[in-house]
Length: 322
Image 1 (cartoon, helix red, strand yellow):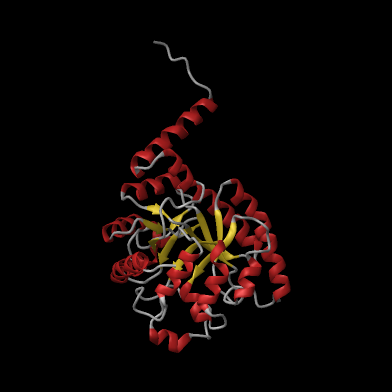
Image 2 (cartoon, rainbow, N blue to C red):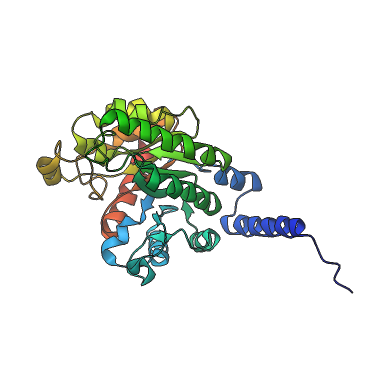
């Protein structure tokens, strides 16, 4: 039989359906649930996830980390993305993913191990639009293809010469530029407490209110909020809970708390959840009362801490009531 040929539009439509079918088969979900996931919803209740920083000291690549997360028992992970190319991840010694890669290939790695992306770690200086606008736009498009419902970021390091009023105007410009992209792709933007403005509850809320959009809210980092030492971390969570899309479940060991609280605005990773100073039953109670049905993405520094955190958080989530 002669090949009648198809139009480019028909080909693209058929290809997208094939891709969707592969996703459904791998995820074992109904089409409506899979679509909800792609639009920014987690299709289950509150659940622990793992930020890929847990293998940073293991010096292993992203795919290895996904397999390890699945082996431990996680169902969600949070990839960190970068632009361009860099030596360590290209050589397989680091976990970050270049956004020059095919996001569907990365999604295939996740699906192979039964893992869903809870969000993307795509931190950048919102006060510097020349850096952050293109980066966040690319991250949003990458997240949409990957099936990650939220892009997590913060105000970044504000230049020394920039006063607060100017910084907020620049942050607003960045957000006004990128939020429409997030809305078109059904991706949330989660502002995280991590720098000199966002460790203050009022300023964190102000940044997430610079643009009026249901796609702009919070990724509350419990450890950073605690270490900032200027706002009560539980009061911050309470104030932000109804617009919180994602949680960085970071615990802080007692010694770090004694040495650094009030002197820093954040830390890359914490200790195992349950081994530090964070009151996780209280955190879970606040989130449950607010109806949070997302992921508590554990930010810890070792595989052993990831294992311990999963067991602990599963127990807390199962036993605590709002």
